Amino acid sequence: MSGAAAQEAQDVLNAGEYRKHLPDLTSPRFTTMQKQDAHEYAKAFIEGGMPPWLHALYLHWRKLFQEPFKGVTNDGRVRPDLFELQDEGVPIEAIVASASHLLSKLSPEQLAVTRYHLDSPEWRSWSNPEFLLSDKGIRLDELIDEVRNAVLAVLEATLSPEGYAKALGAMRINGFLGDLVEAPRVCSEYSYNFVLFGTPATDAPWGFSFYGHHLCLNVLLYKTQIVVSPWFTGAEPNLIDTGRYQGTRILHDEERLGLALMQSLAPEQQAVAQIFKLLHDPAMPHGRWNHDDQRHLCGAYRDNRIVPYEGTLVSALGPEQQALVLAILEQYLLYLPARARGVRLRHIQSWFHETYFCWIGGFGDADPFYYRIQSPVVIVEFDHHSGVFLTNSEPAKFHIHTLLRTPNGGDYGMALRPLIAGAEQAFVWEGER
Image (cartoon, rainbow, N blue to C red; front, side):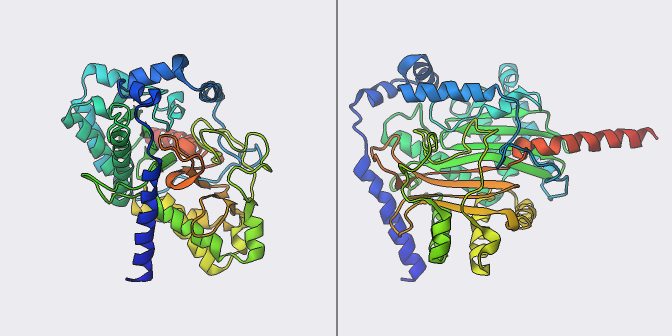
């Protein structure tokens, strides 16, 4: 067996460790959950069933939602002129055809809850827990097969083939989790909402949000250009080890490449990159760790967060290490079609002189960890979590959260929107001449 194959076999074995942490399904949490659908479950949480810390988080999220959008920054100041309109070769005709086909299948009632104005603040009300805090759009597990398949066809037309496979993997693992805890009406392969912003068109901006437990995608499209940001992808556990989708696994490449990068650093570089030695370190300032996002800084509702640079500068690393950084970023850009991904990678690489890599936790082969890569034009985060449905009180490699943000107003394509408006106005003026 080759070294790579041996490592993959060991990774699968390690992922199976989650079975030591299966919960007691006779506990009130699960016996109650097993009787509820997603709406009942969310209502019970919001109206008093939440643990106090979770209720406080929910209230904080709603407070953050009231803030005008600014964007994630490293110092509180939004830097201008970082993004531009460009041809990224996105197959916009096929995407528009898929979205139009979906709309033709919706009832008037479904259309009324699915379509929002392009500039609606509801772009920002996505969240990744299993409880449905923002119920908008259509929910896949409540649709007939024909309509549900039409929603998935929009995803398939928009994302790269490998990105679509990753999204399906996250959805299927969520269904597997629902089976493990015997609550498929709350956690299923189709417990996701789809919302449309604007009107599908080949020559005007529009987009959609697709969100639910452990998978949230926000997509803006304009002509042949695409923004997929912010997005969140997670898994608990990250391996299906039995049943219809046995062998499905996600987020292991992001884990493997991140660890390879950290282990490749010289000791003095590791000392700079490792900002905390423990995943829940007493040296962390108040608020640096929280129950829900744990070490993540840029999760749901954190659209305006200030995230100072930390760690080691990527441009100071060697060529092999910079190649690992690019390999990590390629995994985080996997949802983008190939040409758009290449354009985005080159743009990010042009900012390596202001790109930082930081690490929390140990970096032995068995250690759980957190890492972040951050520049003016991208933030990606990786985190091993403690159990939410499973019972592991400490972070473990079978529960993973990942996310991507585009700082300085890039999320939801906000930084592009004034450029789009200017381009459209210029087109009108030109047409009037």
